Image (cartoon, rainbow, N blue to C red; front, side, top):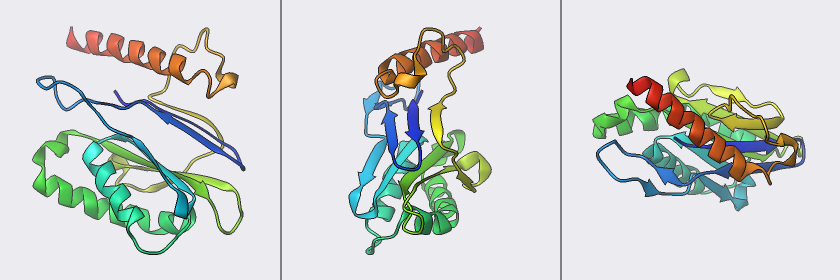
Length: 175
C-alpha cells in the first residue's frame, strides 16, 4: 500500500507519503522517497504505485534544463508520461500488472496560486486538475476518531488507519 495525503489551498501545499515499497509477496519490502520537492520549479512531485516510473519521471522533470512552472509541466506531462510508461513496460514486463499515479503541486506563474494535478496510468495519464482541500489516497473509509482538521498533525494516525483498512481488505480478498 502507498499512502498519499495532501492538503492544498491557494497559498500552500502540504504533502505526506509513506516510504514503504512492496515489490511482491516473495520479496521483503524496501524503502524510498515518494515525494520530491523541486525548488527551482516551485513544485512538489509525489507518486503512488510504480516506484520505477516515479524515479524516472522526477529525473526527467528535474533535468529538463530550464525552469518551468506547474502549469507548463502540465501541458506536456500526459504525452511524456505515456511515452515513459510505454518504454518502461517494454523493458520491465512486470509493470503490466502495476498502476501508477503521479501528482504535481506547485505555484502557477500566471496566477501565483497553488495548482495541483494528477496523472493516472489507468486513465492514460490524462491531466486531472485537483480541487483544493484534503486528499487521501487510498480513500479512508473509517475516519472515526481522526480530527481531519488537524492535518498535518493527524497524518501518522491517518496512515495507520489506511494500513489497517488495507490489511482487512487483503484478508477478505485472500479468503
